[in-house]
Length: 183
Length: 183
Image (cartoon, rainbow over all chains, first blue to last red; front, side):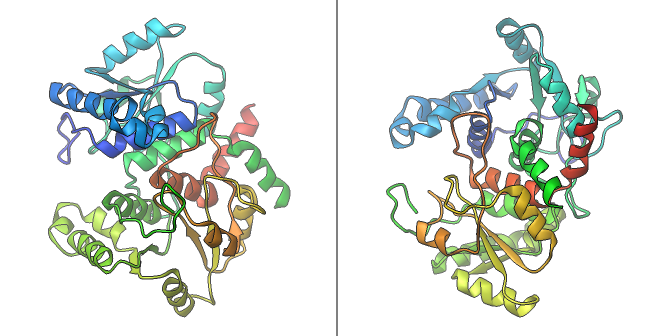
């Protein structure tokens, strides 16, 4: 959505590609799909990836190419689902994120447990002013919003993705058990 | 440091200001200090902040100005420490972060407990290729690196700051206790 709540195609942001690919690669995520219906935005995204995976960037910083090699570019969410279905063991379950608490949302702890049971899952983030209400309602799971300590909740998609991925599949669990011992 | 391990002054990145200010504001952090010895970089940083706090950006997106109002700009770490000492209850303890595990590092769980005891703390992140070894050795605390699931650890400073702040002062603790119940 844009600022006024209209459903729009947001522009692809260069640093979203880099940051979320690096995050995904660090946490062992299989693929990072960038979805945009705009042909020129998909073409631009492919050019950025090629620079780091095979072009001048590959020599300058090979680790960056290793991260960007997990990025896949699709026109629609349906195209992504089809590709995952053909590569994995059945169609993926969809998980949407939002800064506002949607009806019937699931906690981070609960979803962490569900993910451990296996099977393909896609975690979906919206840019601009977030995913549309219809899209959120149609997903298999709606994740609780991230709540900080303050009466303010306007994280970038780069920060939100980092925190959500760490909470759902990060290795802080053992570290947390340590807290219980010291307190 | 730069890629070759030389100590350098890295350029300030616009999205670092936005993302880390939004993160800090969401988690109730008192201030986000941007340290650079370069006069033109400090001037540029002040201009960016002014645009969102008082200029055209303040009308377009007031929430962004609310975040950027926590940013403070200093020439040196010493200037930052002096300012915090004069505003808070004594000098702050320094905590440094690194993608490589430094000697004598402290776990996230342990540091979370320490922070709860109160007193000013500064959490320090380096851009470019990270903080220098001398700087890391001189800090009061060295935090464990973030470890994902894969044999790769090249997060952006925006992702690293998001994950570290969430682990140290985020509200996922109660959610985690819920995991213990379901498992």
